[in-house]
Structures are given as structure tokens and as C-alpha cells.
Image (tube, rainbow, N blue to C red; front, side, top):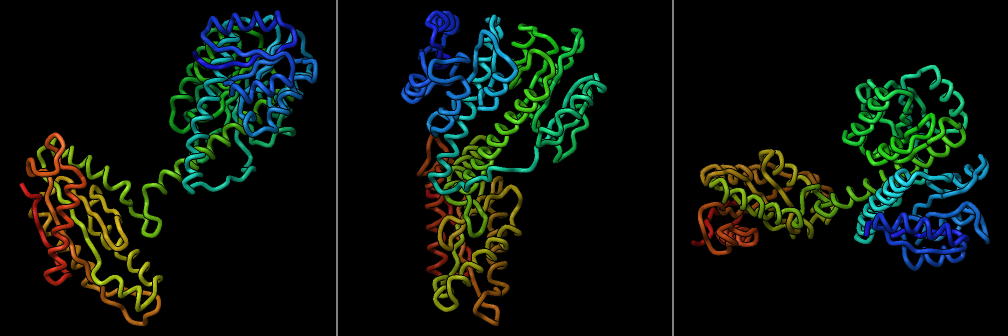
Length: 468
């Protein structure tokens, strides 16, 4: 099944006709005759879309949408209205309540199914990001987002600048957004960093050539990295079901089929901006969570969760290319004394400075991670044994050769490090999977080399190879 749709209509014939159309397109269909039944069904079945009649026995479509929006479990379900006759007031009331679209009968089946696909596609994408956001919040990585952001940006794309300017002037007083005009040929070319529109309003004017140009632009907006998350609304001067359906399938989020009407357009633009703002916040939250999941909050380095899979990838690449690589474990000597004598704030300051010194003396391709309290893992791809030895000795000198300024001491304190080094990519050895050395085997070998460095007086490098 492509998705689950709840039909709400008091007239059974209407429900049956619509169900047949949707079922033929492989949608699972649930039915309700009243708003009360619809609310129960929405909670029980969690549909991907609700299609409602404008008038219901116990309230209108706007009232049903309001009831669904008040429940956290149903507020994200998209809703569209199919009506026999609509007037401007009822359409605006429905859209203002949160309804995504109002379609008037008779409805072309191709356009109806394209609109259904568009709404369900958007709903599924939003649900996926919401699930990732919920995971980030459960892990403690996310912060609540502000409900209000800066005014959005919208651009009307059309060749008719004179008419567009009239539209812009009439909408601006009722729209909290920056509204501009651009011809199709420059709409993407002239975008400036930090000024990318949140919403593109693309007007399909008369003529196949112009329509093709606008539709190509629509596809380009969806394919371009900086604009692919923007909202897109297509405006038709008069209904054309086939063209409208094609625009929706290309990636348009909304469609106005009867030309310009300022109040309706303003509501639709606001809805698209609101959806984009929420989606942007969800993506930002997930990115923050992912970064937090693989980063050490004190030093900003990668953590063990990131380092071990990375080491596995380096080992696999080494096996494929035949080039050796170095694995180092660096551990600060007598670090507990620093915490005991000068306090934990001083210990943290030392760790931060050590991370900086190590980072500054490694290549961009090398990986540095904090994998324990005072323990660091260094992976140097495509590095022979002789270079690894030189690099490890240099790192040891950079830590021990200059004192550290810390809170609680007027003088620099001495800090040294011991480093254990092992080489990977030197042929099959213990701890391999299909001939590739595993991260845990390599880390174990480097740890043993580190132990030898500690046993022989600290502040030194000990080099070893995995046992054959």
C-alpha cells in the first residue's frame, strides 16, 4: 500500500466513489461520517492523509482541522477538503485552520491523485525527521526551538513584471515576509548567500514555451543544494489538471488553480513558510544531535563512538591499496596528580591544550579522538613505519617540551605524554576479519605498546607491530 487515507463525509455515496478512486491507486482507505468519528479513527489508525467534506453533521472542515490540531497525536496529519461548492469565506476559513488544500468538484482524477501523492510525500518526510528529532531529544542532544524566527523570504517567478508588482504590493501588508519578483532565467542565477528564498511562487502563464521554462526551473530548484528544501507553490491563471498534476509530481508543494487571490495566496505562503521553518529546525536539531553523538564536548575532538568505525574504514582501505598506516594511543602521564593538586578545572584546561597541540601537529587526513579521560587515539593513513616513528616523537616533544598555563598555578606546570604505536596494513595478523585488521585488534596492540612506554619511564614513544 502507498499510504493510509481517512475519508470523512456524511454522504456514503461520496465516500464510496472516492474510496474506489484511491483504492485503485493502492491506498488503504478508512471511512468516517462525522468529525467525532474522524477524530477517533485518526487516533486509532494514524492515517497519512485526511480528505474531508467541507460540511459535516457536527462541524465544518475548519472545525475538524482545529480539533485534530489540538491533539499532539494527530496535529501533524495533513488534511485536504473536497467540496461541491465553495465560497471565498469557507475556503479561507479552512486554509487558515491548517487545511493544506481545498479542491472543488468535479475533480480531475489525475490532479486528485497527484495532490494526494504530494501531501503524503511531504508528510512522510516530515515524520522521518520528527522521529530523528525525537531520538536526539531522548539522547539529550536537542534544545527547544523558538516558535518565531526572522521574517521569511518569498520570490514570485514570472515574466510579467507589471502584474507581479501589483500582486506584491497587495500582499505585502498581510504577509510577514520579504516578497520580491524574479524572471525565470535569473531566479536561481542571482541568488546571494544568506538570501535564499524560503518559498518560490512560480506562475504558469499562457504558452507551452513559458510553462516548460517554469517547470524546468521547478525541477532545478528541487535539485539545487541551497534551494531543495524551499517551499514551491505553482499558480495557474486557469485550471489545467494535467499540467498541475505534473507540477506536483515534479516537486511542487502547493497549487493554486484559479489565478491570483491575495488573501488565499498569503495564507498558502504563510503555511509553506511555517512548514519550512519547522523542517529546518528539525534538520538542525538532528545535525546537532549527530555531531554531539560523535564529539567530545570538552575538547571538540571525535570520541570513541566515531573513532572505532573510522579506524575500521582506514584498515579496509589499507587492505585494498596495500599501504600501511599508523595507530597511536597517547596517554598523559600522572594526570591524576594535576586534578588532585590544581583542581579539575586545571585538568580540563590541560586536556583542551593537549588536544590543540596534537591537532596542530598532525596532517589534515589524520584522525584524532579522545577515547578516555586522558587518552587520545591517533590514526595516520598511508604512513610508513619510519614516518610514524618521527611523528610520534614530535608529538611527544610538543606536549612535554613546553609547560602549561592552568588555573590555580602562577607558574607553568610540566605535562608529559607516553605514546604507544602499532602499524596496520602489514599483512594478515591476529584480530583480522577476511584479512583486514579490526579496530579493536589494532587498538589493543597500540595499548600494549603504550603500556611498555609507561613501564620504561613514561614521556616516551614505544613502537610495536601486531603479532603475526
